Length: 449
Image (cartoon, rainbow, N blue to C red; front, top):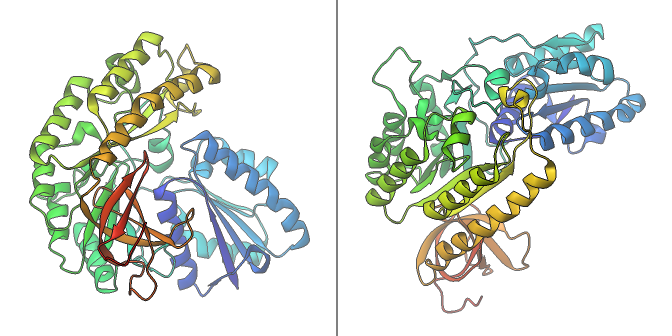
């Protein structure tokens, strides 16, 4: 029997889908080349943002007609949308073509639920919060997007309870994986040819706080992983500023393989809004973190996330964010409109802003940030950067692209018979810069931009 998986949402969901594929493969199923030949359709969902939830609902609805024409097909919906309060009941009422509803804590049981549904034909719902989550199966690069770089979960759940965020309610409290399991998994991946590992967690800086072994924290985990010879790059996401430390910067500076890229979500540049978000820091504290990073590693790339239009955000509050973003000088800021999530405190707050106000403010924020991003990229012109090649460019024929240490996309002309392949690390001299991309040449006289 064959399966296909459709994924919506963030890196955590993408990694969950790799786990699901490994589970199904281990249970004797094989991957379908298309939905048309699938016996099992798994929809892995996300409810962190409304856009991802809307796309997932639309896709699940579209499967009704497919199920009518293929009665024996099993449709399973997994992930955050299922775990969210009230959604399972809504699915039972509105999406009766779905046979299995499997929450974030029950994904490991999916193969047995498929067999049970095929035997009895009765809808199965499991949204029980079981914090004794089994150890993840080792990642199989047959199911990852790339064979040379993978994502590895190190901690599940979140204890921060930011007022806008649904994650603690659908993924539970923080649970760190055993350090030896992580180390063994990454060592095996590196020996299998993986060159870049990205460590995943809602807050990687909290790693180890719940472990019986007091000596393990995120900084130590990074140090141990840095000793793996076959690895070339170690990344991680996401860091919470409240738990960020100068020790972590020292570990990065002293490392051989940890990328000098710090993604530190600010979310707002106004202390009043940060307090309303329950972020646990203010702009003065955040500013000191940036000073520490830039003092210890001046050439590091610093990126951030920002939310525009949080409930109660006045024009004066937003102006403070604009001013603080100008002060921070991020290489890149990923900007989002505030998305109301039912079940979170922010959804019940007064003074919800209109879509028009949020969109207008987002444009003003980008007007501030984009020239800063361009300026940072222009400073790299003339430098030679080591690029981990990812493959052909989606926008320019005869060009390939990769990423530098700071996770910036670099596009370059591909040279036939050069031996360059996805996963290679090559020197590229930066010749041009745009807001989001860099363009350069392989250090070879026969190459032209």
